[in-house]
Image 1 (tube, one colour):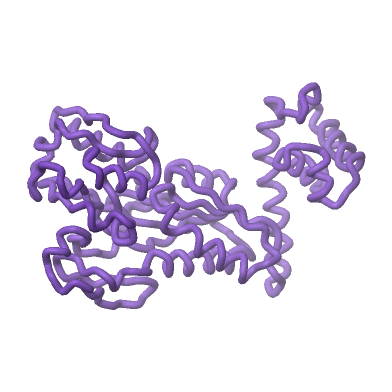
Image 2 (cartoon, rainbow, N blue to C red):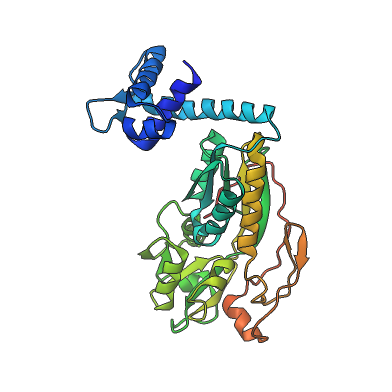
Length: 351
């Protein structure tokens, strides 16, 4: 078993064919086939079912793929560590929680690719829980995730809290609901939320369960902007991060509902592998671009209560383009951001 054999196997799995793998590795197709066969002989078991076109992974192949990626990445990290001034190369695998994908993925991807053209950037979105497990398991190098109440997503591992804010409960302006309600008042109101697996949905469901109520299913759809468009049309109420609301085309068509006793607070974290090696600089670039992306527009609208915000150590007071507290009810954050408390225990992630 050797690294080139592992790289050939990984390339076949990720590209879907021997031909595509040969192009990635700049090898002939027979050369790729020989390397995969050499790996199978070393392990004593077939990794690909060649009866299907394209070849499919066997049960052993699926397990071998996960391990092969870790071994190859570890070898690359070792080489990077021995050349601290060299240009980062290879793969940088990053993820962003689905709750922030529309807000915080495009600019970081652009900036990392511009700064590190030799890196092969692989970006994806997903639920925070899945992203945390991927970083823990070594299949992602870094991820931006959300947790509830500021708890650390990976206790004792690499991570940095970026921002904390209280989620907003929003409704269409014509929906017959008062501006201040109890959670029980929403027991018969349909909710516009994401699918099972989304922590926003779990937070709402658990809050109703604590009051002996059940979540009334409304429209189940992903994407904050699509959810806000449906809420604006009067199809129910929903939960959104104020940063997403501030940039939405529907921000003037919805209003924030104050729900007594229900103030879920979420912290965004950037987590990464314990020893990122030469990927540390690209990960910092990704973090800085992420902070820049989520900070855009912070000076457009002021929360209902004055707050101070820390973004990468830079304190500033947001402005209010309207100069009218009535608009603050609609789109303000309505909370004081605080530095999240450190907890030894890992928390449940939040999307």
